[in-house]
Image (cartoon, rainbow, N blue to C red; front, side, top):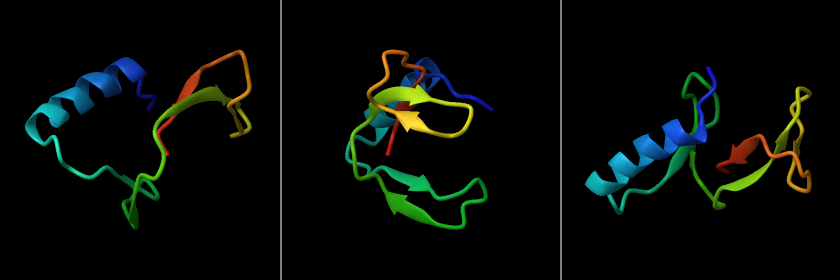
Length: 66
């Protein structure tokens, strides 16, 4: 399932209003076997079909949250 930045922003803004001081974490896999805190702010780039993320690309299609 792909999540758009618009969907993400709507959800994260609602959470931020209710829990403004919550720490952001991420799941290491889709089963939730490990969790860690986020360590960078979101940044944009091009995410290829091969799984590469290029922050120097002029063709932006993805936002990296960590």
